[in-house]
Length: 192
View 1 (spheres, rainbow, N blue to C red):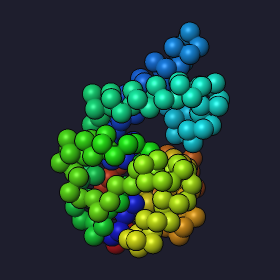
View 2: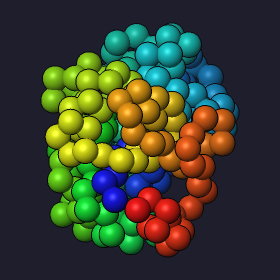
View 3: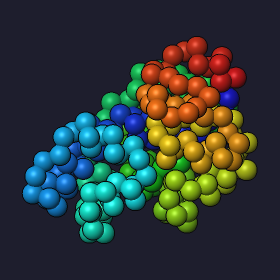
View 4: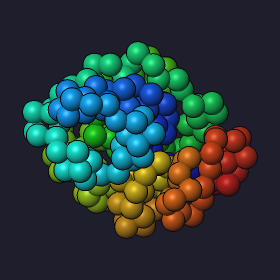
């Protein structure tokens, strides 16, 4: 089992605080509230679409990212069963738009950092964003990854385009080889 993972919303449930952060910046920009369900749906789309749709200036985008890097550690439970899957894999790699320090801190907090061969932080690694194939092609070439696990097209489309099978976590709207709602121990045999 050679797996590529997204981090936020896939290994650790950071969406509660990410939605809070988005709603905070939205209210600062527009002077009104946005419904949390609408924000969550948009946050599973490519960032440039979200920022364009909601008229976030570059400074607003920077504020949102800064809040995420600072505040997501407040409320982010580990998804049940994910550690068992990580432990059984031969190779685990993450592609994330987080900065390296916050990604490592989040994984260290849960005692998961040692499961990963590499954490590819797209902006810091010289890739333009995690919605383009560069980081995924690099990971596939280096680690011969078989499956990508993600919760959005942002995670899964690039992985599929470089030849990985894709597993959609808690998102039925994505065309995928497999859809799951939880990390069941039976996945270990399925992924092998």
